Structure formats: structure tokens, C-alpha cells
Amino acid sequence: MAQKIIIDTDPGIDDAMAIAYAIAHPDIELLALTTIFGNVRTHEATRNALALLDHWGSEADVAEGEAKPIAMPANEPSYLVHGLNGFGGVEIPVSRRKKHSLKAVDYIIDASKRHPGEIVLCAVGPATNLARLLERDPEIVSRLKGVVVMGGAVHCKGNVTPMAEANFWNDPHAADMVLGASWPLVLAPLDCTMPVLFTPDFMHALARESPTLGRPLADMAEFYARFYRSHLGLGGCVPHDVMAISWLTVPGAFRLQKGALGVLTDGPAIGQTIFQPGGTRSRATVFEGRPDHLVMVDTDPGLFMADYMMVMTRYAR
Image 1 (tube, rainbow, N blue to C red):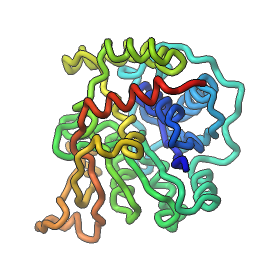
Image 2: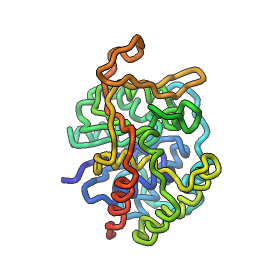
Image 3: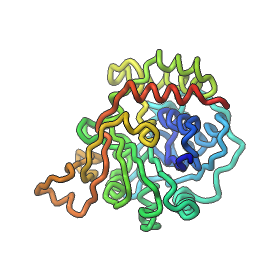
Image 4: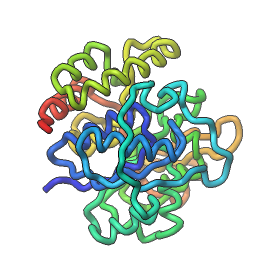
């Protein structure tokens, strides 16, 4: 039976890579995209989500989420990284479909009641919708099968400041709430995303072998890779958000560590992920009462990339 998932997303080029993989994978049933600010503004994320689903033939719902962080002013979107339209200037036809009548939080609550214990929520943008979800319905922690969050940097440096990863930096208060909740959560931080590089050769092969999905992604990746080349000296782009989906389908590609997590919510290190390994004790009272979660701390790039290519090239629609 296919795994039911909802992707909470701010599309975004790596978001598009993750959404395409979810659509293509035969063992995934994509119920919906819920949208959030980050790479673009929330209304732009909704537009992009609808456009991608239509372009790739998915009937999944799109429910619009929060427009600003829970306790701080919004940062500017990541247009420098993803382009002004979120897709590196690549034009995806605007959808004629409408967003769902329910807002994102209400949609997730409703879906979890219709499918208790069956849905995995994969969050690949700022955690604001998830924090509001916990506020609105604390019992959600027992109705979701799992939560996978792409965000943070545990044993490595950040990508928007030396300490902070972009998703957590964009709403650190929400991220701290989400990591402190007692639901079955797996964190996919920069530790597991940065070892993987989609090179131009890889993207060209993807476009050739999977034209429907791969061609627009390869075009987007040209813009994305220019950022990585100019700012980090890398010869390709990092598919951060795909990890949150791949954990469900190829978990053997990742090395795990267990422990309690938090996020700093003020000061010069705002957005920094803090971690106390499971089974250890310290004098840091911040971890008291916090549950241990699984953290993906490394990736086998060869296995991950082979799986991504295989899934995408087998997509027949």
C-alpha cells in the first residue's frame, strides 16, 4: 500500500525536485501540498504548487498556509537562490485550478482525522504551519504516522548564517516548538543534504531519461547551480528537500543519530540548531523534558542519487 504524505512546502527549486520525486514514486500517495513562505512568499508558493501539480499531472490538493512567522517579522524571500518566480526564471504554466477551501492547518487536521495513523507530514519549508498545527490541535501528535522536517544544521555550519539553516532561521520559534513536540519526528538537516550534489551531467541525464519531470528541473537547476558555484564554489546544486521524501523510500541511504533538539530564538545565533545525543546528560537545562528524535546526520550520495534517477526515469505519465 502506498504511503500517504502531505508536503508542507515553499516551492522553490529543491522543493520542485522533491515534489517531482513524490509524484513519480509508485509507493507514495501524495495527498496535498500545503504552502508556506520562505523561498517565495506564501501566495507565490501556492501559485507554484498548483502549477507544478498541473504540469506533472497530479490531482493532489493545495492548501494555503501561514503568511508570516509566529513571533518575528518575516525575512525577505530567497529570490537570490531560487529566482524571482521561485523556479529560476523557468516558466511553468499557471494553473486554472483553485486552492483548497480549507487553510493548511485545517486541511492537515481534517486529513489526519479521515486517515488516522496513516499520513506522514513532510515539511520542507519554515515550520510555521506545523507550529500552528500543534497550537490548534495538540492531539495531532498521535494521529500522524510521522513527521519529517528538512531544516537545521546539527554538526555542520548553517547556510544563511554561520550558525543557522534557512528554514529554521525564517521561523526559529516555530522550529523550536516543532522539535520539542512528542510526535514521531525525523530531522533532515544540512548534515545529510550537503554531501549530495546534483551536477550538470546528472541533471542533463535526468532531462534526457525523464523529459516530463526532468527537463523543467534541469532548466531550473541551471539558475540554482549558479548560486552554489558563486557562493560556495560547488559544481552543481544541493537537493535539500528531496531528503525529507527519500527517508520514506530509501532509508538505508542515511546514517542516523538520536537525541533531543532545540532551536535558538534570539541573539546573534538565532536559528541555530542545538542537540544533545540520546543517552547522555548535561547541565543544559534547555533539553529537560524534550523528547529524543531521529536525526539524519549523513548520506550515501551514490545510493541516494541512483534511487532518485531510477524513480524519476520510471515515471511513465
